[in-house]
Image (cartoon, rainbow, N blue to C red; front, side):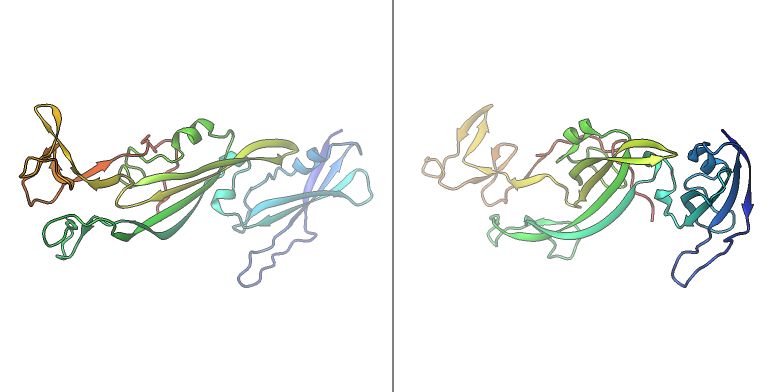
Length: 284
């Protein structure tokens, strides 16, 4: 039970294309076998054309293989269909295909602590005319979102636990540390047939969000206590009574009266390295 010979047939040889559409160029092979029970997979594979193989003349790729018998049990016709495939789709095994990237930009609201009223690029703290900080102000923040879709042999379960809601500790794809946050990391089991065999794999989806200002939490360094000789002590007013309003601090010590408070920055998200876990964004 085997293939005796095969040859390409001029039957159906054509190249059809309409403007704005992909060219249609089927190839037909005639295959002769020595036994009607020769496996169909062997018949289909006889011409040596595999999934995703390029056409010899046109920039299209094999996407369909159709062996059929016209009534003679020893002669088969195998038709190969070709179509356009994006670069990330040109691998036979699912996990060898390139990842797909999509980008989106949005605005989100966040607290306003600084301003650029002087026209310079160096931000200044938002305070009133007496130098007191102003609370409750909001501003729009640019948030750039990238979606990454791809296939993996196994689901990144450990990475999902470690990276979801985490911020990059390293420079990733040109984005400084602390500016990219993992918003989503999920996967779904899939199955495909390749050369008659079932291939199990995982389709994964990742959402990363970039903010130029970063993902740290900021607040004013103010309070009712200060550190004196290594101990916390309440801050007293001119009447030697505990102050009724929070006072500006610097390194845990009351600042000179009239000076604006400093800004405190807190890393509230875990920060593992992103390189080696998430694919680097492709160049334009």
